[in-house]
Image 1 (spheres, rainbow, N blue to C red):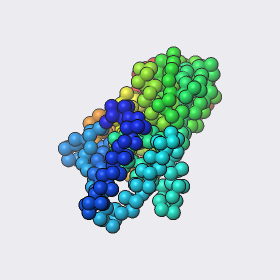
Image 2: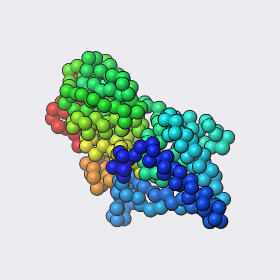
Image 3: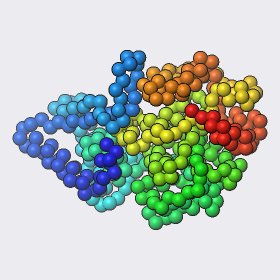
Amino acid sequence: MEGKHCSVNSYDLLKKIRELTRSIIEDVCNDRLPALYIDQFSSYCTGDSGNCCCSYDLPKGKEILMLRKESQARRWDVLLRVLLIVQQLLQENKHGSKRDIYYMHPSVFKEQCVVDRAINDICILLQCSRHNLNVVSVGNGLVMGWLRFEEAGRKFDCINCPNTAHHIPIHVEDVEDVISVAEYILVVEKESVFQRLSNDQFCRQNRCIIVTGKGYPDVPTRRFLRLLIETLRLPVYCLVDCDPYGIDILTTYRFGSMQIAYDSKSLRIPEIRWLGAFLSDYEKYQFPQQCLLPLTAEDKQKAGGLLNRCYMEREVPYWRSELQLMLDRGIKFEIEALSAHSLTFLSENYLPSKIQEGAYI
């Protein structure tokens, strides 16, 4: 599916939209009940059956949308309205956000999630990625470090001020002339940690590129990171909180998200390595006892769900072991707990020693 996405252009998509709508109209005119066959994708399965056959680019089945079913009539309505908006964006070479689309018919859509689902359905039907539809996300990601690139004629020169944050471009397909003298890429979960490293001038002392998605990464952040890895061929490490939600964010980078599983192959980062924080870091670096926090009921539920995902056992068993240890001991801690030693301990001691010693999994 990745290869198909790369070759998609507006002309091809508009042709597919015309063919799809013509097929629907012909069915109606000939007293046939229109039906849409939408491939179903999944980033993972759960359970202990041992019969996992998950694939990142192959559908697991099909969902059939029948216009005659009253329960599916509203979904048809939403999908066709969104398809009409997408057609207009492509014809006029304009871009819009999912939120823009929602506010074009708020009384009909009622909820943002139904628009999101319709966009995903359209991507699957047209065999494309969301950005191919000219539907863009509001980017949250930040980048700094030894990097220079252009996006639609604008120059981003991070190298001259490697500790200055730049917003990750929304139109990643327009990024070109990527140049770097960095030795590795560091992905950090939280903006607060990103700012800590910026304040400590980490990139001036260490030739690297630092990226943050400010929590769960959006699509532009993951696409930009994918572009950097493919272009620069650098090792990439990830630093997240030592808690189930931090590990879930890590798996989103590594395996993709269930919400847009149909596009996981072009978004996932199989090269990413977990740099920390590990539960063993608490003992190794001798944090004060007060830095440890008990797992909440929500934490335990999240951990249980993660442990049941097929890829945890199949592809990253060491990650699973760390998560199981966390659940068994019932404790967690944040990256900021490293500041118990000193504000600069993260940048001057923890990260350099981890990378130099190869202390990642």
